[in-house]
Length: 299
Image 1 (cartoon, rainbow, N blue to C red):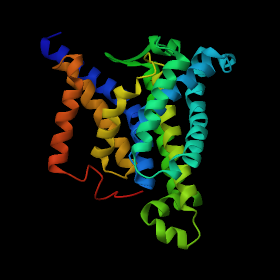
Image 2 (image 1 turned 180 degrees about the vertical axis):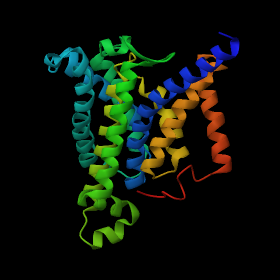
Image 3 (image 1 turned 120 degrees about the horizontal axis):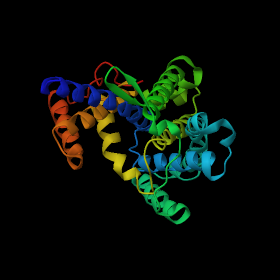
Image 4 (image 1 turned 120 degrees about the vertical axis):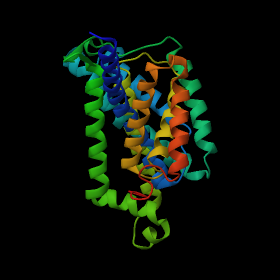
């Protein structure tokens, strides 16, 4: 093969990796987007809820062996999905007994510190991962390799994002959440419990992100402070897609994943976030409302 052919293969491989990683990034951004879209609160603890989802998936699959009967292929995926409802309940309770009684975003910053340091006390600092053969095997299409763990994560992320979108658009509860987001006062006048809507939105947001964390746990190691590593990705993705847009948040996360992986062709690993910032600034300069900010102002 010529040098140009090898370069083309490298570009296609980076695109494939960016697509698979970006799908899970998109699910994380959707979780953050629904919280901001409904509550108009920036959740500084979002990365730490993702970390919590990783540990829940880990203990369901390996630590407690609850899902061991499903085997090394299905068990980790089931653990990632079940991490969502577990963290949803935690988020719901936190909102009911703490967040709903405190205004502003400072409370979520405090929750972030408690979760990160509490995680260090409970789980220790040793990096862990959900062991599965999927992380060591790949599907080959032509000369392009697709890591199975990331590919399964991408499919599950798309399914969860579509499911959440349909829930918001087609169900009465989803319409109530959208009404509470658009005009809380008018929603209260027609009988919608706005505080309950905020509680459900917060639980959904952190639960969806916990699923993304469980999916990531199949392909990389994690420790209690890993949430900080994903904060830039989450906020950049949500802003790129358009604040308050669920569809935009997913595409924003997908864009971040593609940029991150493509940057490895010309930049060292340590400068991946630099590429994200450059693309972020360029898009925001030409389109301050984000990619879907005008058409999908709120969902």
